[in-house]
Amino acid sequence: MRQGVNKFMRHNLLISKTFAHAFLVIGVLLSIFPFYWLVVMSTNETAAIFAVPPRFTFGDSFATNFGKVMDSIDFWRALLNTLFVASVSTALQLFFNSLTGFTFSKFKFPGRHLLFFLMMATMMIPGQMLLVPQFIIMKEIGWIGSYYALIVPGIATAFGIFWIRQYAMAIHDELLEAATIDGCSKFGLYWRIALPILKPALAFLAITTFMGVWEDYLWPLIILNDSSKFTLMLVLQQLKSVHTADYSMVMTGTLLATIPLIVFFLIISRQFIAGIMEGAVKS
Image 1 (cartoon, rainbow, N blue to C red):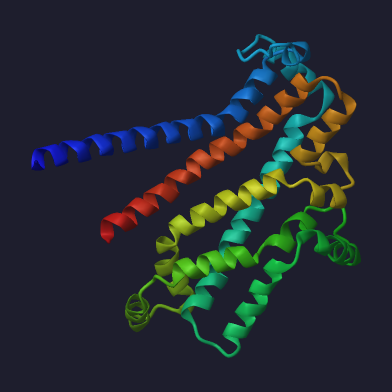
Image 2 (image 1 turned 135 degrees about the horizontal axis):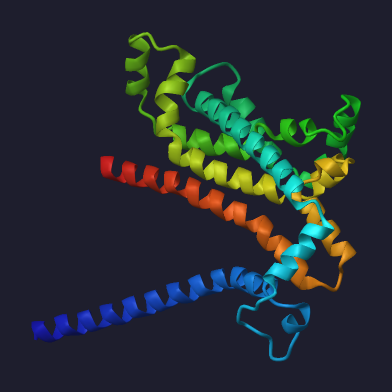
């Protein structure tokens, strides 16, 4: 009787695992297909894209489409501009968000809870409502057309501070007290003790920040008025407006703009996963 029950349970467990694995495979395929379709479109001509039935295999037109993109827009300058803005914005956000989040989590000062509540309340305000006030401020201080207007307003965000604060609350107070007794300053506690522990949280914040700045279109469109300072999203829009029907060329430009994001994600995600695994082993 017991053997029959065990056999039945193993059979049900095998079926459950099979369905779970099949579900995961389907999910992976669905998530990968948009990027695969992007590559297919960038390697084919526009006529092949709209053929019936559509072509799902790679073509041999990528070199032609690549040449059209390079002839139509200043892609490499826009790429360097975007790399500069995204890298500086990410670095500044990591520093100020982590410093502020660590301060909120481990230091007591008057009005701390009220200040944190007011900061969190700003997350309820739609970003579109802030465009006009921010533009007026940038105009008054003379930052229209400058990268300062793209970088400085976002060096600290409510989400970033909240994310780091929640992660930093897991740091043991005894560790900070021992470092203080050994003569470590308050900034030293942040730099020497907190930052190494916050690596997984910083890696996640770096990924989201870099991708958000890289993909931003509306704010650079409002601020930048010099074509030599345009970011990738702006020049890709120009590509689409000039060549409305040549979707294969537009998709080639989109693919070229996506590759740096994928490389950045693969590099930073290693730190994120390594930090999680390190914490799991220590626990």
